[in-house]
Length: 66
Image (cartoon, rainbow, N blue to C red; front, side, top):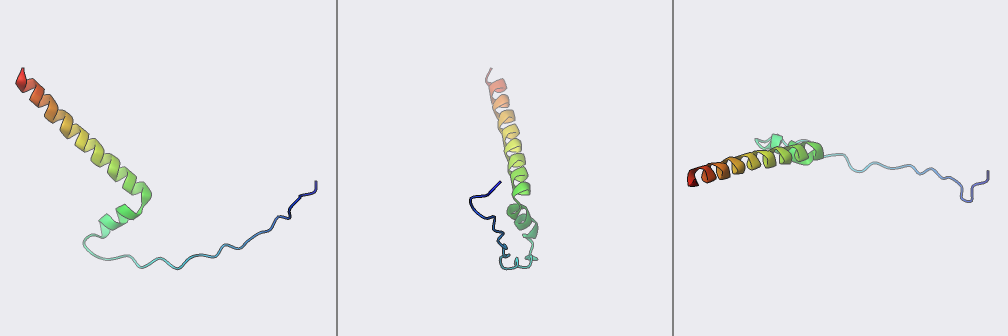
């Protein structure tokens, strides 16, 4: 089988090295924010907790209004 275009392999060069981690009191927050998986889990947990708090508050308000 003849290929219409030759397969050419390109060497991918790496970008500049990552900066060293920041050692501050907010380092854990920065590490969570900069990791897409951890950030999505964190946002999901915050949304879930907020939903539970709102649902309990609304439920208590409805129970007290009857």
